Every structure is written in structure tokens, then in C-alpha cells.
Length: 305
Image 1 (cartoon, rainbow, N blue to C red):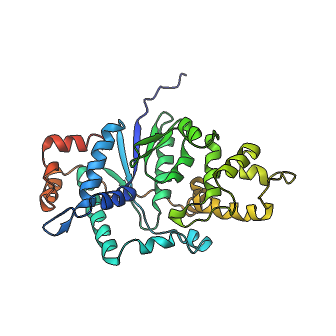
Image 2: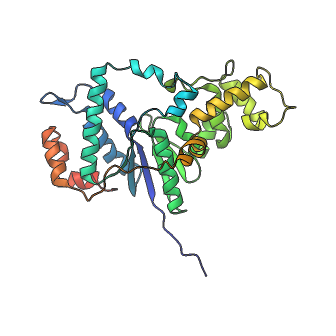
Image 3: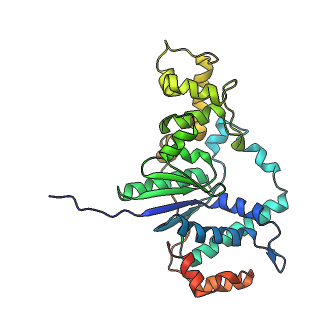
């Protein structure tokens, strides 16, 4: 019997928290009757433009939760510096705007995933995994400035950086990283560390040495599996210790297999119902966002719900 052909869809998986922070800092001071609206306006406007620019059939939005306790146990300083970036009052205002934005997107009928106990990166990975398993012809574009999502890039998964407007494909990834193969680029990132999450890199290894190491030894794991191999500046015992920490902190499929899946963690959907455009319009009036009130504009925003 012939296998029935399927027509896959192009999914956008949006890093909602990343868009919220970007909107907060790009639209500082935007308010209505004393109520800040920079995040509300910025996120919804971004969804409208991204849906059309990236030709989405379906938009899914994922939001960040608390830092996972297993990551904190492994690295107590994880994301530690972020606490000082905003005052408690600013942070509270941002959280309030994000909650309002989720409510408005809910009224528009968008599918959102949010759970206080699941970090945004993990939620996006699990959502991407679910979409790809639903139909082998589905494709995904992950919208985020977080370069850790580049580890998921394949012929079915691209990433899009909303700040640089760059679509990252396997070919682009290789071209931008010394000609390394896409599967090697994540080890390249591990060597360099991630200052935005306070995850250290391997001391004494910069971009050039990291690329040389990977061209010579393919991957960190391949090097560790072959005790006869050597590389100047690399201590095998220290590398093994470093790789264990870095992989646990940043390798999304690995963390899912080791921690999330054994504990039955799955993407949790934020609400389920048909769009309530009247309710959305009421909230637009409440926050003075009149540009979203027209029927034509609402049709454009909800094109890919």
C-alpha cells in the first residue's frame, strides 16, 4: 500500500520572553494613562510582522519559567548576573506586561506554552520536537536571539534572529563558523561559554583554537573517546569535567533525555478556546493601542493562529 502523501506546515515557534525583553528596551517610555505598554505593543506587533515576513502557517509562542533546580544544583551561579539588570520595580512592571500580553494573545486565539517550572529554552525544544514528530514534512523556524537554539538546526529547523533579521540555515551556520559542519558548531559554542547565562567556557580556548580543535577531532566527545589523541592547551581530565557541566547546562536534547523526560515533563498549553476578538478589542482600548482595533488589522495579526 502506498504511503499517503502529507503536506507539512511551516511553524514559527516564538521565544515570547525574548521578544518581551527586546520590546521593553526598544520601546522604553511607551505608556497609556500611566500604564506601561511597551511589551504589549511590541510583542503583538512583532508577531504580526514575523508571521508575514517568514510565511508562517502556524505560530506557537513559548514563555520562560523559573531556572531549573537541577541546573542550579550543577552551577549555582547560573544566570546570576541577570538579577542586577533591572530594579525590583522594573522587573515587576515587565512581568505584569508579559502577563497582560499572554492574556491578549489568548483572546486572539494563539497557542501558547507556559509553565512556571519549565525554562523557556526547554519549552521551545519540547514544542519543536512535538511539531516535527506530528508530521515528517513539517518545518520549524525558531524566532529568538539565543544562539543556543542553533544546536537544533537541520534541513527541517532554522532559526531567525529578530534583531539582525538573519535566517540561520545549516549552510549559513557553517559559513559563519570557520567552515565547521553544523553538528560541530554547538561544541564550538561550548568552548566559548555563554556570558548571558553565566556559563563559563574552557579557559585558554578562543574562536580560532576551538575551530582548529574541531576540525582536527570532529567533536569533544570523539576526542574524549580516543585517549591517544592530544591537542595543545587541552588537559583531558579538565576537558572531561568541563564537557560534563557545559553539556548538562546547554545541550537541550540531552537535558530533556536526562532530566525532563524521566520526570514526565511535557509542554503545557496556556489556555484553550476560540478567539474572542471583542474581548481583545476591549483590552486594546484599555491600554490605548488603537492600531489593533480595526477588523483588517486583527485578521492580519491572527493569520497563523
